[in-house]
Image (cartoon, rainbow, N blue to C red):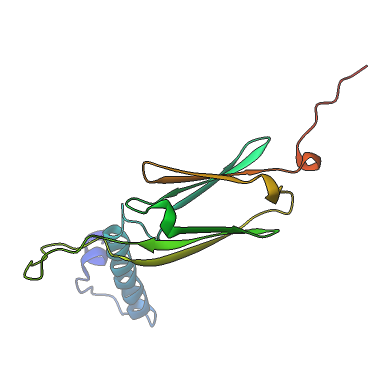
Length: 152
């Protein structure tokens, strides 16, 4: 019985009105399962640069991978509740007659915008680019930092 259902073999019973819909649902599940398996391990969002946003008690940290991007090609702007990182990735030209076997690194302009909470101190933001990793340290306002209350 299970063998018949899995492989769609004919049965001796009368077919229900919903048997074809069930068969179509199984086929769609199989197709979507194959599509999902094909994207495992890839960057699903497809955006550049990849960004991590973390925080501790005093600061927010934005870490961005920017391999091959020079600091003079970056523009970082902050507003009350957002951080914008934009720039241009330049890749050295290869000779004109070269044939690519694989081309995954593309030159061009990029821009990312990150929403931030309202409790930041925009005057004390620092940024550093080292070994292709851009780290932006965004301090929190004093009022937003947790305070330790002593019990008397």
